[in-house]
Image 1 (cartoon, rainbow, N blue to C red):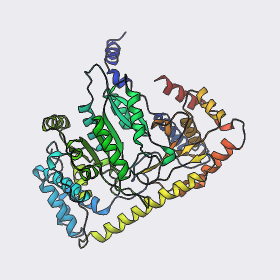
Image 2 (cartoon, helix red, strand yellow; image 1 turned 30 degrees about the vertical axis):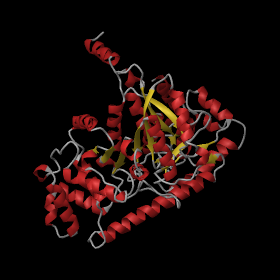
Image 3 (cartoon, rainbow, N blue to C red; image 1 turned 180 degrees about the vertical axis):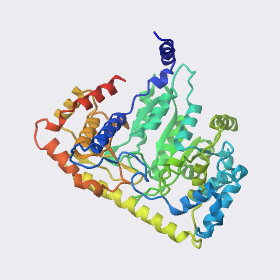
Image 4 (cartoon, rainbow, N blue to C red; image 1 turned 60 degrees about the vertical axis):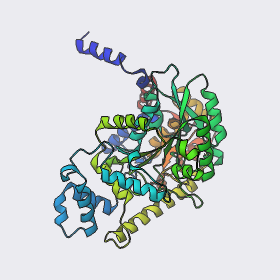
Length: 505
């Protein structure tokens, strides 16, 4: 055997077993087929559609929402400071760029920053949190800016997961839940302890399900944290204040660290829904809870009106942590030097948008109102269309960026999927891709109760845009029109190859 091959084999054997246990995402098979279909379309292969429409990602700009003019003007000026001499840009744009560059070493976005972020921007985040929470104080010393909220969450989990303990560390995790978090827990050597949101109750988090999850963890792991997503991803629910109070009492009684993912806090659509942060509710509950419950809350510039996913700007605020622990968290964060500077600037612009009277305010207000109207309309329209389809049941989308409808598949279709080694909802997504050129995410990737099947749909995208491809046509006629296995369930050789490849990994 060649020496390079021997070395590679040794390296593979030395890979962390926790990383090896991370399963390949179902989306990989779908993405591979999308690339093949796009190439076939470029080569002129005839299909019932002219393009593939991807509604699986939670990327606002990818879905067609336009970047905010004020944000891009300020960022452009920071990248090319000569623009500050141009009268074509509003005065407040140039002033903001000058202030932001003043916080950068050497006046350049190309310089490193402090580990926790540019001090002026960290203070901006602190002031934003205080305003948002109705005056609840926020200490800048407890805030860390990061390359996205997921990066910050992974690092906090890295502190919580004890890989040297004889009993593995568990994290109570909602089902459904975006896959990055579950993979992150597994990659760190932790155990995902699932608690299932109540779909029939609009994906409500019920405390009795948390108790059941703890019971299921006995003899398996030592649960140390509870992870919540509000608004939900991909479930789209918004937690009530009462539900949050119950969760806080639960983590206090069970001595669990509370991880609150609040990145979709600006995306609220339900008429009776309101976002309230866990920190605010915790403070309102008063001592001893407000002084003892350990909390990490996360936010990001990737979601909401900003939608700047690619700039990588997020933050975590820590509450009630021991100063000795904070020291180690800072050390851990410093391993990546600092968050991308443009992401930090985007955070500042999100926290401090133009105000009435500013030159940029009229356009900013018009753009944000348009985005809000679009998101609310799309969410309501998506639920309406999905619920009009036979075999679909979609709970109301109160917030976030996704709908997570349940799909009722006939037993024969489920059996056919199992015969080829694939989850039924992944199999369904592949057929919808093949026949209609639509790419959805399979629900099995996010966690679901046994015997149920779902798909995840990004509500940022206007569902009318691809209604001409008729989900109705490819769902009802092929799945429910007869008891026979539809013709399209016969997979092509290439997909079969992809399925086997995926199952072998």
